[in-house]
Image (cartoon, rainbow, N blue to C red; front, side, top):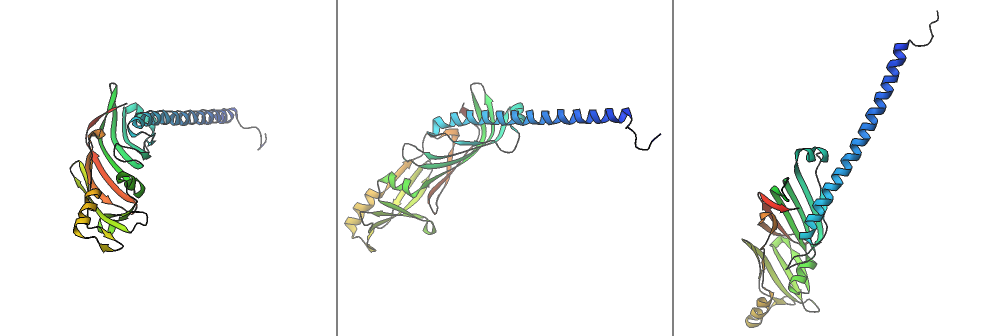
Length: 232
């Protein structure tokens, strides 16, 4: 008899079982992780392709923190985020879009969205291109844009963006040249050219404009929508 003999057979069997279980669980976790990544990428790619047809550029797609396998099993994507730069519309180019779609479900050949929240940012360069202006300088403290015209930019027109239902109106104020207000007749001619109306029609996801603000970089339009059908 010895105090340090070989361990009993039942202990050796338990060790072997533990090793086998560890290997199996490790393989299962690896396979699940691979499946998760694969499913998440496929869902994101499909959404990006469908949204890209509307945006004119392929967006980045996020599916939130909920495992994609769980979302797929339930048939519902609780929170889908799409971000894209360089989006173009009929009236503007170079837009940045950040959209959150909630409760996205597949339905027949398309799908449905429970609700949505979208922000669209237009920087100063995009705004200048809209009206063929020289330089646009945001003035968020006064809720306006200052448009500099001419080669020197000495001719300035303050423009106040306002939201009226599904229309953005750019309302010009009194123009000035080198800091001095222009006389009446000339001022009227300049403001008539600076005025703009941008219709917000044919919006996807039943979106409605909610707020328009002047930011440090340009303009931000906030939209939201309720239940809506989508094409996949």
